[in-house]
Length: 116
Image (cartoon, rainbow, N blue to C red; front, top):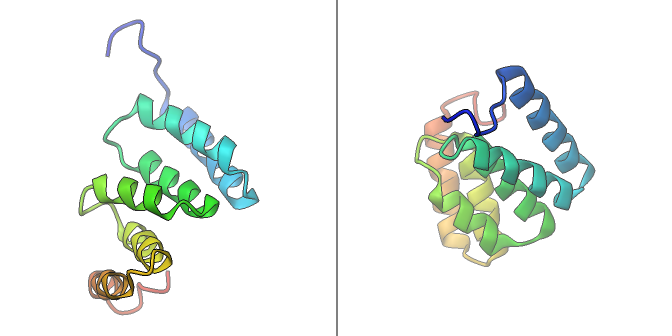
């Protein structure tokens, strides 16, 4: 990272992420999207901001955009990514694929973890 590139401390990253989650919780999809796009630009490849962008897409009802974002995330991005992907697929009427993703989620989460 060069001297001109903006940097965030872990505390600043966490605070901005929490603000973004509040925007998601409040249904303020535009603000959440702007914030998570900025965070994603600061740490491309981190995955957490990209997954949060997909959550904003789901909130807006843009199933295709959410699915495209989720498909670009690595396979080890987390169980929540599988749940969001299943939701997008189901909303697109791709029920067989959604069921397969849910089966992957349940198998990966293990006993007792699927509800957490």
